[in-house]
Each structure stands twice: as structure tokens, then as C-alpha cells.
Image 1 (cartoon, rainbow, N blue to C red):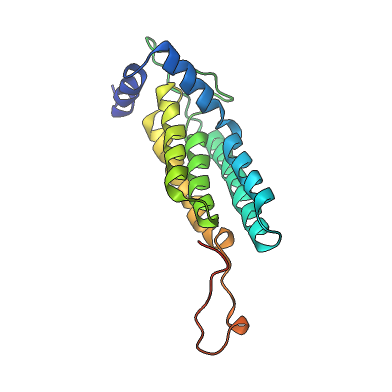
Image 2 (cartoon, helix red, strand yellow):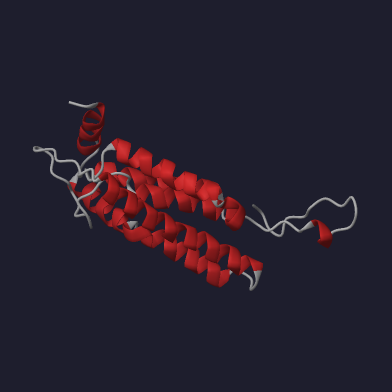
Length: 187
């Protein structure tokens, strides 16, 4: 038995009760197709000031959508099927039979980084991202390596495009000689 399978068995057997399983299944549904993250980004876009603030939130939300699309394409290319533990069937249905990388993890970690750089507090974003990613293990629909790969993919995509999401920095022509750059908003 592989380490991946052993860790998955631990996740599928520790702390399980019917009530917790229902709660985790409902929570995990929020992450389907990056739904909760797109909703957060769209709400922030509507609440942001017109101009750069709104544009920053649109870019951050688009980054999450692009992460989901790339994750789906990678999943099709890799073709790894979801875990099948004979004595521990999955506790949730999934949109595809493919497993690597976890879209819940990739979109969650992309959103956590992008939305933190767009101005929301990082700690609650990363707490939500970790819980969303771990819900997939608890439900038995991903191996731990799927979740780690998804988290790395989402973080990598967000980091690569962070300059497009983070607060704009005034160009040299917009400031006086010797004046430091001033960020338009918290990065």
C-alpha cells in the first residue's frame, strides 16, 4: 500500500460521524468549479471603488477562473483516476473521474494568494483554502498528492500573475525626482 493510500485511509477514518460527513460534504460543494472563490471575487469587485480597485478585483477573480480551466486541462492530460478504496467508498460525487491535481486545492490556493494581494486579510483566506483542500481528503475523492499538487499549482499560477493582480505602483513619471513609489492600495 502506497503512502498516498495510507494517508487517505487515515483521512477517511479519523473523526468521522454522520453529522460531520454531511457538514463537510456541504462545505466542499461550495468549492465546486471554484464557486465560493468566484463569488467572493465578484462581491469584492462590486464593493470596490470604481477604477483601479474594481479592475484589480476583476483580475484576481479572472485568475481564479483561469486556474480552474488550467487545472481541468492538466487533469485530462494526466488522466489519474480518483481513489478507489474497496472498504471506504467516497462520500461525495465528483464532476469527473480524474483526480490529479485537485481543482478545489488549486483554485483555493490561487484565490488565497490573489485575494490577499488584492487587499483581503491573508489568514482567513488561507484558513478557508486549507479547509477546502482537506475536505477532499476527508470525503475520499482525492489522494493527498492530488491536494498537494493542486495547492502548488494554484500558488504557482497566482505568484506568476501577482504583478497583474497586486496594487498598482505609480510609474516614475507620476512622481517627483527622488520620490519613492507609492502603492495605490495594500498589496
